[in-house]
Amino acid sequence: MVVFSVKPLFIIIVVSLTLLVVFTLLSPHYPFSQNPISRQSSLGEGDIWSVRRLMEWRPCNWWLQGHQTALPLETNGYIRVDCYGGLNQMRRDFCDGVGIARLLNATLVLPKFEVASYWNETSGFADVYDVDYFIQHMNGFVKVVKTLPPEIVTKEPVQVDCSKRKGQFDYVESVLPSLVKHKYISITPAMSQRRDRYPLYAKAALCQACYKALRLAKPLETKASKLLDAIPKPFLSLHLRFEPDMVAYSQCQYPDLSPSSIKAVEAAIALVERKPWTGELARVWRQRGKCPLTPNETALILQSLSIPPTTNIYLAAGDGLMEIEGLSNIYTNIFTKSSLLNEEDFTSMHGNTKAALDYYISINSDSYIATYFGNMDKMVAAMRAFQGLYKTLFLSRRGFAELTSQGLRGKKLMQALWNVHRDEFVMGRGSALPECFCEFKL
Ligand SMILES: *[C@@H]1O[C@H](CO)[C@@H](O)[C@H](O)[C@H]1NC(C)=O
Ligand SMILES: *[C@@H]1O[C@H](CO)[C@@H](O)[C@H](O)[C@H]1NC(C)=O
Ligand SMILES: *[C@@H]1O[C@H](CO)[C@@H](O)[C@H](O)[C@H]1NC(C)=O
Image 1: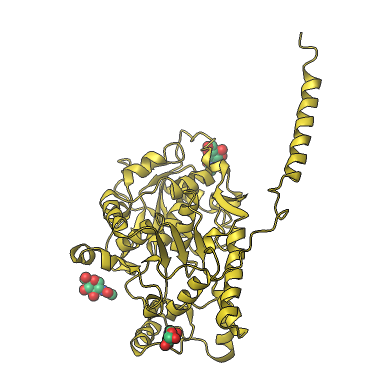
Image 2: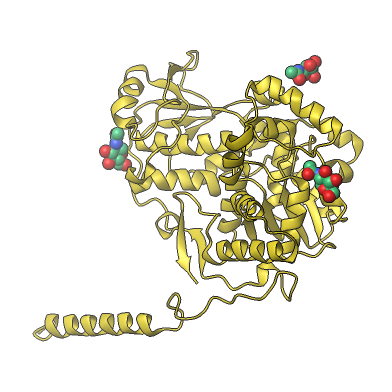
C-alpha cells in the first residue's frame, strides 16, 4: 500500500533543501551584499543608534527550548556556591556554580554572598534576589533547596578549592569524588572555564539561572522602580568608571587632575600597592586601551556619536566619581541616585543594594553606554540582549588612545571616533556575549 512512499519523499526533501540554499545565497540579506549604511556623521544626521546593524546577539535556541534531559532521581550531594567581590562578580560566579551543580547532578543550597570584605556590610543572597522566584524558575533545570536534610543540616560544608584553577579544570574528575564522599561541599567556581565542553543540560541550567531566574527581591525592586520612575524619559544610562580605586588599579597617569582628585588617587594607590607606569611603558599601556576614560574624554566620544547634549543621562556609578564637570559641563541633564532618592532612602542603603539599583536602571534604560568592560557591563549587556534592547555600546578606550596618539584633533578626531564605534556597533563587536548567547545575522 505504501509502495511509492520513500523515494518521492526523499526527492522532494532534497529539492526543497536545494532551493532553500539557493534562495538564501541570493537573498539581499546575505552579509556584505549590501553596503552597511555608513552615515556621514559625526555631527551629521542621526546618532549612532540609527545606523543599520548587520549582527546581533540573542539568547541561543538550545537554551530557550529548555532542558531536554530529565533530572536524575538520586542526588550526588549538596553544593553551596561561595561568592566574593562586587555584586555582578558574585552573580557571575553563582551562575557558573549552578552549571557545575547540574554537571555533577548535585542539589544546590542557597549561595553564600560574601559581601563584608568588599562592601563593608552584611547582605546575603536573599537581600538582593527573590529566593522563591529563583527556586521556582530553576524547576527541572537543577534541584534547589532552602534547607538541608536533617542528617547534614548541622554540618559546615567541606570546602573544595577550585577558584585558582584555570583552563581545562575538570569538575567531574576533581570535584565529584569529594561531593560523593562528603555529601555537602562548598565551591567557588574557577575563572576562565571552558564551558563549551559541558553537556547542554548543564549549560542550559547556567543560562536559565543567570538570565531568567534571578530577579531582585521585592523591597529592592520597589525601590529600584521608584528610582526608574523618577528619571526623565527617554534616557541613557552611562556607566562611568572614573573613580580613585579604578584609576589606581589601572596604573595609568592622568596629569590634568584637580588637587582633590590627586589626593584621592594617591590614597587609593597606597591601598592597591601598585605604582603607575611612567615614560614609554605608560604610553604603551595607554595605547593598549588599559586606561579608564575620563569624564572629559567620555563627553568627547559621546559627542562624536552624535548623542545630543540635551540627552537625559543617568550616571550608573558609585559615589566617588572624579572630575565629573568634564561631562556635566557639556551634558547638563545628568541624574544620579543621590539626586533622585530622598536623603533617608539613600543613607540607609549600602554598596550591594546601590549596585543592584544601577543594574536595574541600566537593564531598563533606552540606551546603555559603558566606558569600561567590567562585570556589571557584561551582565547588563547580556540582560539587555535577552530583552531585545539593542542600544548598548562599549566605548573603545583603545580606539581613543590610538587616534589621539596619532595626533588627531577636533573634527578629524570626531569623525575617526565615529567610524570606530560605528563599525563595532554594526557588527555587534565589543559587546560579544558569553555562552548563552549566539550571533544572529540581521
Ligand atoms: C548526571 O545525570 C545525567 C542525566 O541527567 C547523566 O547523563 C550523567 O551521566 C550524570 N552525571 C554524573 C556526574 O552523575
Ligand atoms: C565599616 O562600617 C563600620 C560601621 O558602619 C565603620 O565603623 C567602619 O569604619 C567601616 N569600615 C571601613 C573599612 O570602611
Ligand atoms: C578636562 O578638560 C578641562 C578643559 O579642557 C581641563 O581643564 C581639565 O584639566 C580636563 N580634565 C582632565 C581630567 O583631563
